[in-house]
Length: 91
Image 1 (spheres, helix red, strand yellow):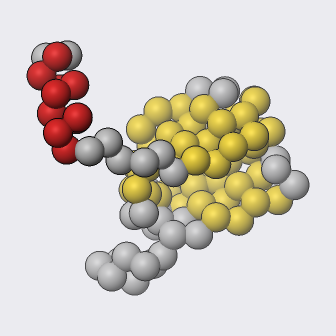
Image 2 (image 1 turned 120 degrees about the horizontal axis):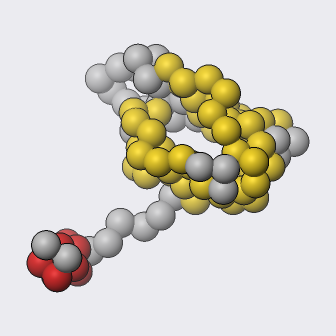
């Protein structure tokens, strides 16, 4: 639970076609195949077909997604040394 706002991070999915998410801080990217969100629990990647953001309220941290949801992924964070090396290569 995010102590600063008093709200947590929750996912509620209905028939793999609707997903309500709380604790959303930012939309990093989206298209019809993938939506990437920054949440209070880290980055969240949603993959599927015909994905769309039906409702977005960043002040309240609420997002509703529609479409056919194939995967919900919390990617692992890269280690600091690897990230630094990649950061130096792609500067």
